[in-house]
Amino acid sequence: MPKPTGPSLSTGIAVLLLAFTAGAEPLPRDPLERRCWVAQTQQRTGADLREPVRVRISNLRNGYQLRAPFWVEFGIRGMGVIPAGTKHDKAGHHHLLIDTPLPKDPREQIPFSSTHKHFGKGQTGTELDLPPGEHTLRLLFADHEHRPYFVFSPEITVRVLGRRDATTPTVDAKDFEASCALWYQDHLSTPPGKARQVYVKNLRDEEPVASPFVLSLGVIGFGVAPAGQSIAETGHFELIVSGRGGAPSQRVLLADGRTEAMLDLPRGDYEIELRLLDGSGAVLLKAPPLKVPVVRQER
Image (cartoon, rainbow, N blue to C red):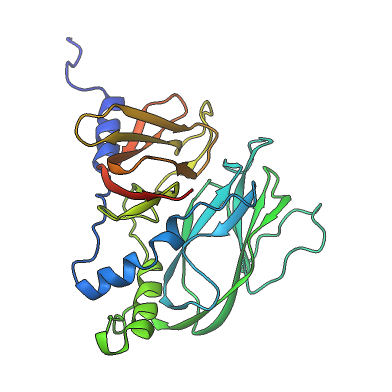
């Protein structure tokens, strides 16, 4: 009996995974919303190297007012991400502390509870559904045994106003600052959906930036792990940076499991393609190129 000559199962899976990509999200079309969004570009993308190792909630700030459910983005600088159970001296995984203080003894394992959320698959974000009122949030980074590195974010307090199915905030020209704040906070915290995707968290298509700038990277449906690891459903990030008009491309490989990259580019127009690669370097997911105009350099 002749063997099948069609695509192999592995090829079919690869094609299926590549189909689950997210397009580069455009800037808001509404002039007021666009003005509101770009007013915060530097806050989202600015490079801050005062702390070589830092963990942070990258999309929320103290005092934000949100609708539930809302999205929480995890950021880590100076270390990589790797699922629990795999020992790695320079990588770990995130834990989210909700309405609870830091552990008193850093030698003890972080407990599993409703106030100690574990992200042992190497996740880069999560959706939370909390009741109305004020809640405290803090990220705590830990090793393969859930023991804290004691690299943790500042604690922030957010206020949940109600359900996300209620009226969506809008930007009002007559009360721009207050309405912009509510719209922006709601927009940053909107869950991105369930489909498998790799995406740039903090920058939109054609959004002007000052260089150097930071790209925060996220993935849904997979975890993050350094290159060379044979951990199912994980990958590491790669950026392909191309100058528009035929300039040569450069490759930024985050092989150590990092989820943030700082780029220092001269003024000009660029396209940046984000990919998620498996442990051997094969492409799992990729996003369409993000067009990035660098309008000035900060020195």
